[in-house]
Length: 448
Image (cartoon, rainbow, N blue to C red):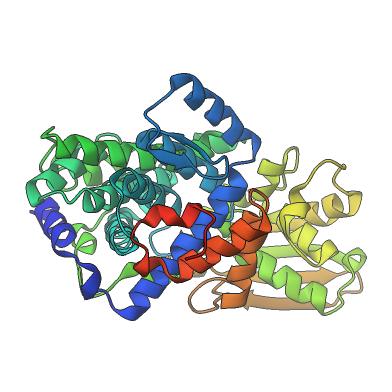
């Protein structure tokens, strides 16, 4: 039984079994998550959620990161998972089309705070959650992704596993946790039509619902025993074409967390390959005024989700490949300031963006989501044609960001919420995470 295999893996995974590269990958993932949460906590959607949680109250057992307030562990998982996703700088796992950190680490950390778990226990829980959440997402990808936001749906399973590991649940209890997680797994793409804040809520609810499923299982609250593979289970309900085998193939031998990708640009990951190409042209001295037309060939999901030029709101612009390309070509960068619309979007960005056409390429579709390519064809007004292509955007394992880049990213994000000494302390605690008696020491601002 699939759920039993997953539960046995979860129960039998121990820190001492983890290869050094897996421990290091988990440290990178947790660092990236923490910076994104801290910065995202100050954004308006997080403030609205915090107001609701304050009214609701809760036993103060875990931290609303960035606000440095405490609430119930469930509320903390909800808040931190939501905040992590707001700035569009949280991690991504490519073949699963899943942002694993926001739902999974948010649940793991809230559970770790509540239980007083160690750094080693947090690492192990994060590895387990990534492993199962990613594999379940791979099992239903890519057809699931047409209607369902994988981070919301499959992230719920990963969050449940991570919390179950912190809670030291037994095999039968983990199966119950999966069963109740699956019945709560939801998240539809319709929010893109409105640029709604719903997307931010998705990983927060996944973290909260997964943690709730694990907490309930610990109390003996039963769940469906075949929630994934059953006749009315998750696979059949949410995917036209799925592979149950992908959920467990190579389990405990291959660790998916080492294949995680990290964002450099604060926009939808589907825009990043094209942004890389645009920045390369900008650095080569291409004058935007000389462009007659830009054609970007990519995979169908990118065309459908980010193919239109939109910039009525910053959030729309983050999901507009033509806008991101235009901004990158003109400014030679794409960062948080690129989406600061306190001043009107420049007419040149709009002009270049509107000259950018995104088309789906059947040949590229064949290799997605194993890689996320974009191919450029730029026609200049003098008739010259410039072509370029990349299969792996910056931050992918095949085209990695450097350790210094990721450290600077953390500092830049965390410093929006914390003073310099706390940012530095967090970095030192992260470097020693497996030696912390309590994982919550990451947030204390003290250097051991």
